[in-house]
Image (cartoon, rainbow, N blue to C red; front, side, top):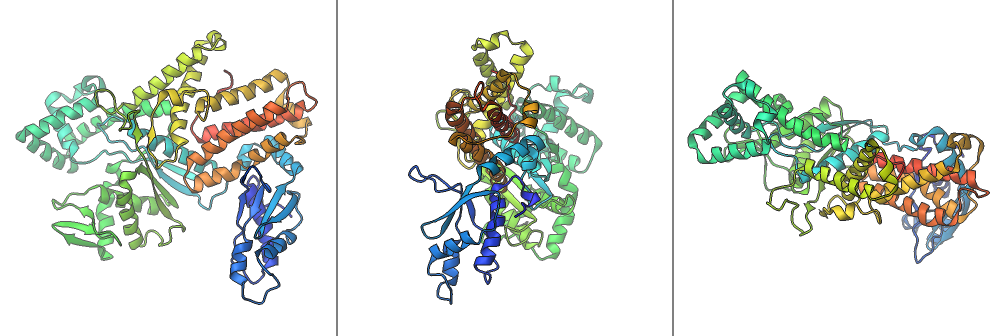
Length: 594
């Protein structure tokens, strides 16, 4: 049976196509059955196959009691196995327990799949998702406030979501929904006018630390009623578009952006800013549309929307007539659906904002913007994440109880990485530029991986010693494992491109086959990580790949100098290719020597 070109790299989907044919032949009357195919897991040290089809019990529960030739789920499983069409993919099949159909993949087919990927490139293994365009709303710091460790998770996880979707042929609009509007700007602008009567004197060097500037203006706002009144008038003038106030607002925003850019540059993050101010002009029209639909009502002087099943209303116009987060977020959601034509909008914030987004999406469903069914497109998804903790188990802060500046944190990771690198004899002779690049890749990669390998909903403890350890499930271990693979290929003295052209991969040794099987599962793992928005699934796959390579294949299968050298070099190259793509999806820069 021919393989679907759309799923050329996805083993699970290719097997599902075969089982789809079998299920139609087995129970022709049940037309809505979807093949349930999964990779087999090891139970009590035994694995019955590579993949398993688990439809038999479900089918039996449907047809039981009807006139049927089957006498139980095991018989259904036997029929499913017998009705499988011939395929080069399959080496053998068996039925276990109540109808589980176990499949063993052909060694030749696995080898040919790897060979084809090495020639055509790993992008041929990219998943195919049912959407063309997505918005990922992440990072989103507030203007005039430092980016702190709390923004780290949103920025790192959001970038990985975007990378996985982009790899899957989805156009991603990477949106930085910065907090660049609101009442705090009256306070900041008025304080700016006091400190710098001449606008030409305003620059980053003159203002210094924007966080300190913000705090000083807040102290003034809280302690001086006259200043507070001027600040409140400044908000009205800014919102009214007065030139002097608009210019001051832009200056403050620009200084903040410079600070944000330092973080994004270190982490290699690409973002397009569309802050709260961008959506302001759309708010009146959006609220008018919702009002016409009878969704907005008066409540204690404010204008609100009640979401189904939630007692607290979503306030869309405050009692003083001003707009708020909810009005901005409704306008942003409307814009993304109607102007940007996004089919999937993903919001990444801390878990504390879960209820806000739940109410927002319920309002959008009530308005008919989103379908009632969460599995249909277009859809909006809020992804919450836990806190970053210090070693004391409390929110991560400096000794003076200040929230840690992100730039300082990243610079320390790089510095520690450099110190560890220079302790290695080999690195002492490297040019300074190579030391810098490697310590940067390892340091920043360690911070990213330490975050991404955790379930995003859980809190995680920030610990430099753990994340920069070269043993265990860390970026350092994985980057060094990749560098070792590259070293094996270099030591062979062979041109790997030439080897690709003239050598066929053979998987005769059990550990060669185990490595090959794990490699061909890459596409389905990326698809699972992408659809379920779980970067830790990809991290687990990458770590397991490294373990299989190091502890099974490389320990038991000599590469350089063996009779199978060329074939095994191609397995090394395939492993390195998959590792590099995993690194790319996680936003980590690979290193090629240690």
